Image 1: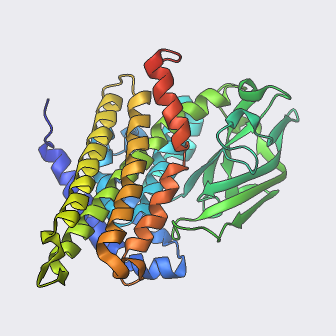
Image 2: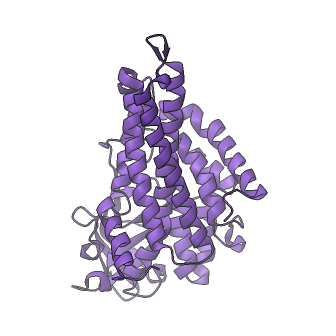
Image 3: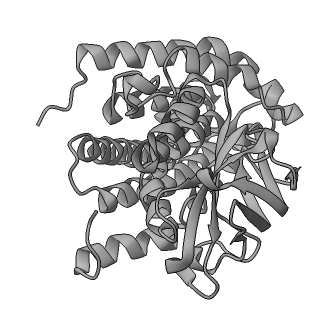
Length: 385
């Protein structure tokens, strides 16, 4: 088994690292303070091909797959984890799902704008009273013959009030549960009846827009149904198995950022005449962080390799997402301890690391849901897709 990167993958890694250091790093603290979403970064990511992973070149894809994608996204998320959402929101969510289930007309119309960064993408699943229980969603699409009429509310939607194009999951059969859901492509700039409200009271992810979407008799063209009618649950689960790689990669990268920061500080900070890194308790904390960081990164690459080779990967993806979430939260907590009182100040990024780490335990499947997926596959109660 080869754990090294190919020459091409190293070039992708270097390019992504350089981009993150030049285009993202200088603005992190200012943007965090102002809760500011810097739209032009998405466009620049598109210009460099950082949104076109696993998308056919005929629709604007970059000709590279999962291994290159996680290698690049890792470097970006290590600098600022909020920006890893752009890959899921544009590429691994809408673009890949339209490529898998869409008509040729839908592919040509929507995918190029998403992978180029011209359009901001999103996907809307969660509702005020429907999270892990996807089949209980109340947003309903009524067939009016020549169009769909959608009513309902979506909550905690990443990029919801800044996006141009998105996927919407809604019920299309009364009482159908998971068997009565469908997926729709929404043109948010040209669809009356949609109110988009930013959610501002978040603990973290301050530069990543999050929204409430309210649909009141929103008229959706019949041709914007994605995939077969009432097959939205299957489409949603297929999509989430891809977008969860963004969570897994982002959490592993955040774990790495915490480790790098803690190591640097432990070598700079002196107490009782020597760097605090010379003390065994600090060394134990660093060792724990390193162990979890290496394991998280390895699980991400394993899941990506399985996806790249079209092998069953649902369990591997959940393993990477679950362990990465734990590593990020533990790493952020350890970093704050190592920084001491300074870790509790805004002078250092420990507070941001901890705030951002916590969202991985909930986003795109809670840790409890991923434990269930892992266990059910291992027990043979459900297939490993």
